[in-house]
Length: 360
Image (cartoon, rainbow, N blue to C red; front, side, top):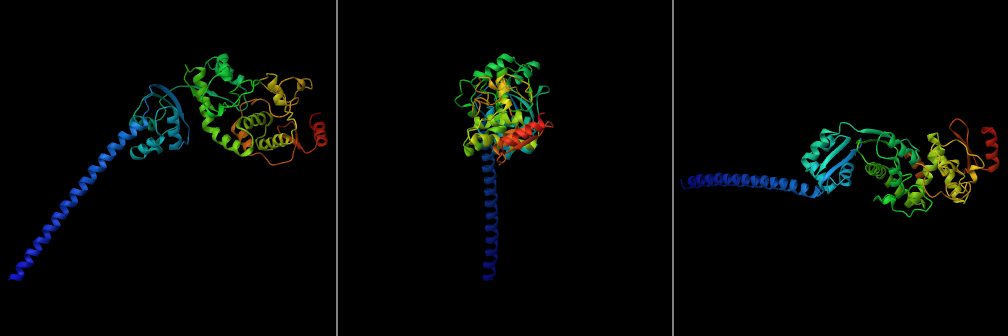
């Protein structure tokens, strides 16, 4: 009997320990949930405090189609809507589905908390109307200024004054400009379709244009300038010439190759497009006269060797990429065939024959 009693007591003791262990386990789980909840609440507060800068006022920005969370975060940071892209990304991964963020044209009254910001990005553009402006590849800056004025956006003269002497805080504009440079912003206006408020000022417009250049071109151009031995202004200048000389897309890299070949042997570029820019033409013709090639302008690459002081147009991405990755060839000459394409020559004699054939 004693043994049986001991066994019964031992069983009861085991059940008691299991019950106690279960209670302790439940308490631990409850504590873990409380701790996690505190971390989540703390995370929300930290994300909001880190991500929301002390900036007040309205701001307009664009989210492009296909933008990643990192790209969206950078746009928000650039427009001083958030302070920390990293904190914003953490918030989105915890509390918002960034895959549902919509491309569009936004207007935000800063400051804004993360909850309202992500709700807005999920909803999509909050601007019902905007003035649509499409800047074609190869437009010179005076054409662009005229285009905006024709849309009742800003003033042409004010736009050009800012393009010449305005102070804009971008890394790609930190270069020592030649005294003969016509417009510091020439070449840096990215050809694209934009939307603007009707009351946008010339300065507002230029900031949006430069933001787009920074986002779509700058990193590619900066990397290429570090690799090629030409600075970014020189590469952009070559791209602007390619833009005005090329008609057929698949010849852009070949034309770029010709200009690099000439520069490498200190041969004049002899680009008709640079002469027409020197003549302040907006619509370039196919050829220039002998007399025009003699004008005393540093933009005249018939008379002066090397590159002009700066870009002669605002090139599109295809011309910029052609300069970043030019065709490796030995051509030194090309002449228009009349159908948009060109005949490329290795020697001057061959070039003269092509002129006789295609420019009769």
